Length: 446
Image (cartoon, rainbow, N blue to C red; front, side, top):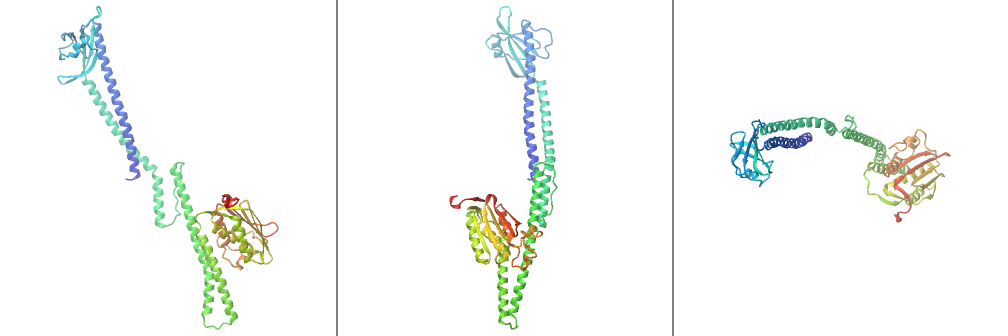
């Protein structure tokens, strides 16, 4: 059963219940009103007869049949020939043994409404007669029958109108949902999330359409990023692979090589394999981006201090200053953060050169790495965190342009930011801020 059909049936069902309750209420109210009017007519006629001393006059009693009986059940007077059989209850009223009453009776196949009331002698105050007033229920039953037919027709018409209205309204309401469904099916067939659904209005379905378009835009951007990543990775891998293949072919060839030439080729192979290893490690780091492991609390200042020691071993000709490391706890991914810090230090060490210095500080959840190299060119600074981007000056150095891109990925995974700037007195400054992921203190005390 479709959602549209369910909404239509629900609308028709609700209207059916409401209309049925309204019709039943109307019917019983009208029946009570008609019966009250009939009883009022019977009561008025009985009052007129009592006021006439219990005697029936020649006047028209508005279609009511009137009969007066004594306390023995004998008929004292009647407005027509007698139709009513003797009734002990009516005699009891004439004997002042029972109060007045109304009742429905059937006489000779006719449904009647009867009212019996004692007729009091005004002079002596003695009850010895009863006035019986009767009226046919045929007219009231006919009116109620017509009312039932009208109410049934009204109910059926209302239910039909509700079903049609429900179908129209549900169709119009679900139109955006159908558009979303069609778009999703087309995207599933083509694999291209470039399509958008029309947006309009301010209701929940309009918000759903806007959210759907936002999701498509994010998916399209993700796929485009993936395509660029694969294309860039293929391009970056092609160069070292070609160089490796060339050197291997030379070593395997029939050309006699001098020992110095052979050693130089082996050194090139070693260097190229190291670059390939670093490139693949960087690609894996970027590729796993959203596949996070469970977070853990670790001492960020100790991690930075240990990474600085590695940098001292890797760049012994560079002076490393890391005396201002504020005790800081980070709730995040230790391995990824260690890789990001190493990339910052390695980048600073490469650009410092022999005899240069790098200052590392940590305060307020922000890691600051400053070198005294040439700094960032104005045209390069907006692009240094892009994948595979390498400035003209960096192309002569080893690397694939992934180091700072990984730093940005790790910073964003921790809800932080990374900024590259030039120092006023020369050199570059990179600031890694972790915002809410870092706080002063020791992990042992948390």
